[in-house]
Length: 291
Image (cartoon, rainbow, N blue to C red; front, top):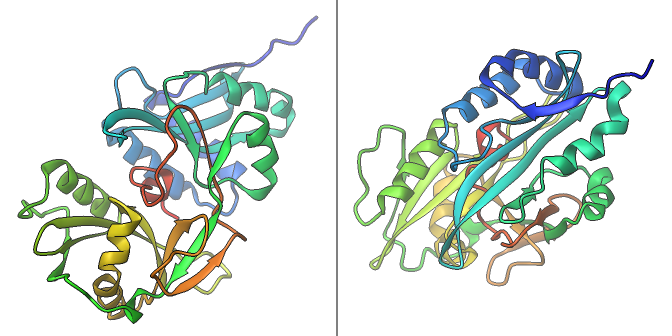
């Protein structure tokens, strides 16, 4: 008698408890509450029409034996609205690992969507490249922006979930900043004489057995040039809060910004029609689930 092959389908809200259990046993350094909190946040998001809210599960005999979390969003690329998908946490129980690659490929077949992975383990880099992914970020730049002058920046102000308006900031940007503040990120607006510029920073959460780095990750800016222009003022704002280092996605040392470039960590991959922009990690797993 032939064994029944596992099937895959979209994750539904009724699956979340089982998915939380699956991910907890698959990623033993993460608590179940970590996964459930992130899944609840995914459940509350607005997603582009026709895309899964949570991702897909691999199912055998009515039970999930694997899952791939996928976070869909619309981003502006070259002046156009593009649908993107952050391919997030991927786990398959050991006895079903021979289906894992097929499972992943079947969930990433839409040619109009740009798929990207912002937390690939080094061991998975050859697998991703075999699946058609290419690196768009090769490392991290550990910047010390407080060493720069503030230049033409007038003020740096925080945005909270309760902020009603920010003069000069488009409503879509304000909603993005408020949403990320609700996730526990630091949302800031730097004001120049010409514009109000939005920024998001991700806190580095302490892991068991590790000493936390006095740093934050740049999660969003309109351009790296905006960050460089505002870096001095932002650096002093964060220095007073015990965070002298800001980590920036990069492919080389960032000109005009004091710091150190490293390719030991931080590589990120994409596949699809639109190359992701450095400095835009908004609405990814790093914000929704936490670093």
